[in-house]
Length: 194
Image 1 (cartoon, rainbow, N blue to C red):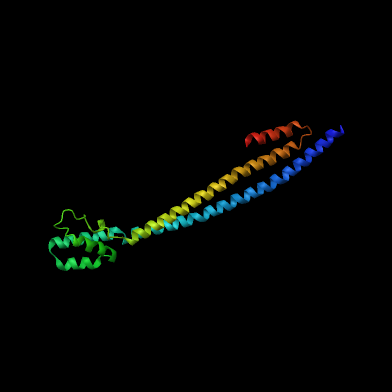
Image 2: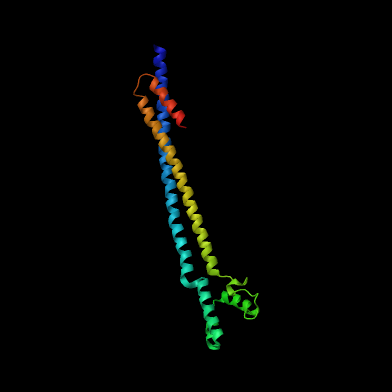
């Protein structure tokens, strides 16, 4: 009888140690969930602001649409023989567009059927606003991906915390029983859920 009570005391001590460890780990898991969710929340405004900036650059008239509209006006003035209006449109070309326009004109596009369809199709034409917009979009995507990754980390900690909380509950319940059956069942339930 004494060996049984000594064994029961040993089990009780072991359960108390397990409870203490699991309680600390559960608290740590909750802290990690909060930490990773905060990091995820921090990425969202970065993603939204960079994405809005990228769209703003494209929508602000600084993209290829300005160049195309200006070139179409130039083309209409050139076709009409209005040299004064041709000059006005040429002064309105963005400097980087003017590089592509000049290269295009050197190919004599009115008489050369193999010339590109317009200055924006010339390798010399580089739209820095479109490049800047693409870089901002890329940065926004990186922040979005980082936010997803940190959220997934939080989800992993949530699963661990739920498991640990279940262990706390089962350990506390098993201590209410004087027989070892419920205690053994608790260990079996925890082992099978891993």
